[in-house]
Image 1 (cartoon, rainbow, N blue to C red):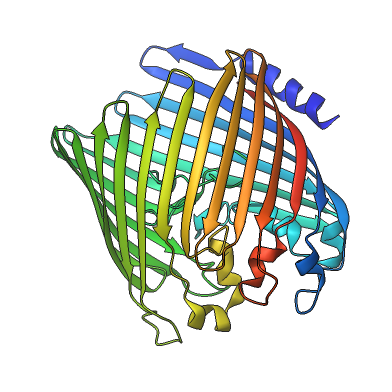
Image 2 (image 1 turned 60 degrees about the vertical axis):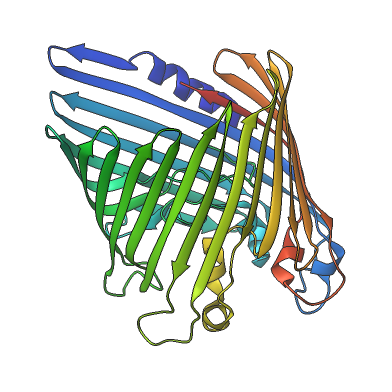
Length: 401
């Protein structure tokens, strides 16, 4: 039934997806997705101290994006409405699993204006969010934006430390989820090879929406030279000072990239640690059918801050520290692609795997079969959240319009 509703929505939007009149253009686009999954709990999660005492359950999901772009000469307005509905009996007893699956938990990363609706009734949870509403104006060598915006940069798909404003989705079965950020941006095109972006953002949800606005002052620069590109970032964000960079080089049909981000302890003198995040990545189209990506990194955990505020863990999907992730995509047939990803935490020896088979049933219409599961763990009480991830076996329909 949910899949049928999504098809009707897509068909209605297609009927007027683009309107042009003189210097004015209006475009509509979007996607819709329906999934069902069977969940199996891991034995360590059922024991003390986690006490997630369930064995098997189900999880159903429907999500949609509807995007609109209105452009008039040098100005434009862009908006995106995001809807996510999930259903699982596990919600009723506040088990961890459905909240781990629903990533990212915050569809708006830096939130001042709210513009959302969330409701949970028993085993049903509904989220309706305007996660983009941006007014943008072009100058000759500049561009200015104000409102709720998407911030996309950095090459990491499993881990992308230099961009704290949009979490990567390389380890989840949901797709096409972008996080909004409230504030202003000024972009200056210094030359064909150099660009500067200045951000002033705010957040009232660092701890509680009733708190005062927490500011973000952020610089992101880009500089290209030959086959190389340097991205550098610096500023204050979430009550911490941060500075870092990404160095990227094109190599044949692929690229090699390196990221580093240094984060200070909290500026408000609460218990916290200075953090260093490192990522080395390789991405290449090895053959006409086989695409390979490898990411190796260190995601440092602030144990002092987590001890005071465990909810901070939700900012990142998996609590891995020293890890390697290998992602493969292979075209079995022009209409069928297979995806397989494995991530290994060197420190805890935890291994997690994801597999997906995607069939292009028709134009803009895909049918997925997927399995996400822990593959190996140590029977101890270290890094308990890793042991909370269930095995997921599911299928989903996805369409674009």
